[in-house]
Image 1 (cartoon, helix red, strand yellow):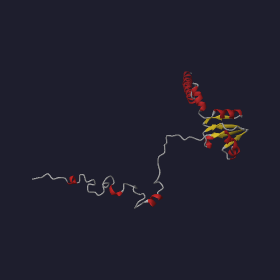
Image 2 (tube, helix red, strand yellow):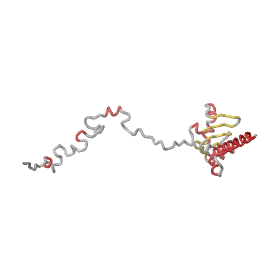
Image 3 (cartoon, one colour):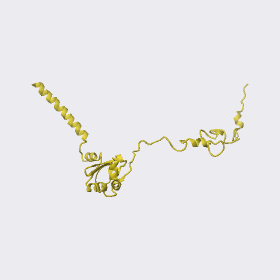
Image 4 (spheres, helix red, strand yellow):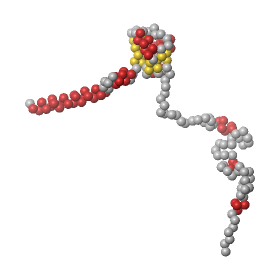
Length: 187
C-alpha cells in the first residue's frame, strides 16, 4: 500500500538557505560570482592582468550609426586667403588667369562663412555658403558654385528638370524618324 510521503524540501521551508549554505548561494549563478568575466574585480582570484591585455574588454565597440550623415566643418574666407598660395603650391587649388579655383569639399570643408575679406578673385565650389560670404566673393570679382543649388532654384521656379527635357527631346526625335521612313516607302 502506498503512503503519502512528505517531500524533503518541505523540511527546508523557512530556513532561508534551503540547505545551500549562505542565503545568497544557489541563486542565479550560485557561488561562482557570476557569469563570464564577472568577479574579476578587487578581491581574490583576480583576472586583472589578462583583462588589461585585452584592449577590447572595456568600452563600447562595434556599432556605427550608418544613417547619420557626416557634417563637414565650416571655413572662413580669411582661412582661404591666408593659405591661398600654399593651396596652389600643393595643387589643392588652381590659378587660371587672375582667378583661383578652389573646391572646398575636396579640402574637407562644408560651408563657406564670411569672416575676412577676399583680396583675390576666387571661384569657390562648396555645398553651402552664407549670404554675406557669397556677397563678399562676388564684390571681389569671384563667384560661388554650389552643385545642386541651381537645380533647386530651377525646380522652385517651376521649370523642368534638365534630365526630363533631355528625355522629351529624345522622344521627339524618335517620332520624326518613322515619318521619314514612311515618306521613303511611298516613292
